[in-house]
Amino acid sequence: MQIKKRITTFILPLFLAISACATTVQAADITGAGATFPYPVYAKWADAYKKATGNGLNYQSVGSGAGIKQIKSKTVDFGASDMPLKAEDLDAAGLIQFPAIMGGLVPVVNLEGVPAGKLKLTGDVIAAIYLGKITKWNAPELVALNPDLKLPATDITAVYRSDGSGSTFLWTDYLSKVSAEFKTVVGSSTAVKWPVGLGGKGNEGVAASVLQIKGAIGYVEYAYVKKNKMIFAQLKNRDGNFVEPGEDSFKAAASGAEWSKTPGYNVVLTNQAGKGSWPITGASFILIYKQQADAGREVLKFFDWAYKNGDAMAIELDYVPMPAAVVKLVQQTWKAEVKDAAGKAIW
Image 1 (tube, rainbow, N blue to C red):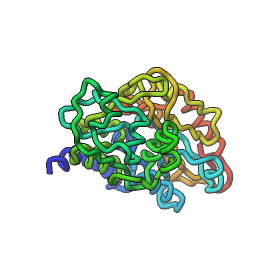
Image 2: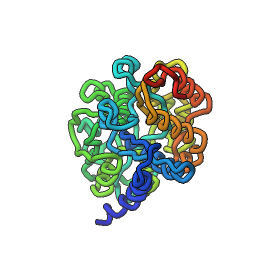
Image 3: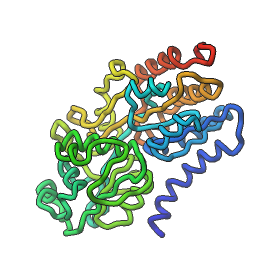
């Protein structure tokens, strides 16, 4: 019961914040569905936007896979995914995508006597855990990385997302880049066949399982780590440095992104170079149809407002706002590609 209370303390206010926006349906209210990774910041933006404009956002935190399905079936005004779609897939569906926010995915554990931020992990060791090759916390590979910690002989339970998830895409994309065996056996996608472990639905489900199961390891967005005071690990990055998650290390990873050179903004920020880069950094993307009516205009108004007014709220939750140059590119894309039925630009 205590675990459920800790998670609920974080999730319920966010749910209420968004639900409040949808209680009085207005012509300008918009609906979206998808990634749980950006859910905390979208909730905060939605609440502030409602107060500032009177317009509501009803966002369903159902996972990237479900978000892509819902926008393709036209049951929402926008979809949200942490896995960017390829340019050819966007064209085939009549969609555009643009990045809304950046943040970090973090390995979390339930290990008695190990303080947050002290455990050191590498990508290949995590890959071996999720492949079922390292099964105890006092395995030689883990002891060698953590000579100053007293690691218990506890069984490791690998927790993963049971729903189609952009977080799983980022996690598996990173592990596939650092482990050839993981790439071959598991691969990279929003949903994969895991050799070992158990699933949890959403970031909140993974967090709940890790908090409940002794010896568990999982992956969640950093806001969930902070709000629930979870034990997170350091990670060895591409430059060979052990770094902690946070705004600075997320920014360091994002600094090398080449948005202007990538069709459809299909940028993946895992395993980026840089001495201070966090290895599992990612952007979260919004999907909308190129042909739009009034609802599409309202979606663009909301994200334009968020770009202009939401940076402080995002930073408070340890997300990384999109750089001004990228926002300018995105707005140019809106103007060039999003049109009404008559072919007239709506932005």
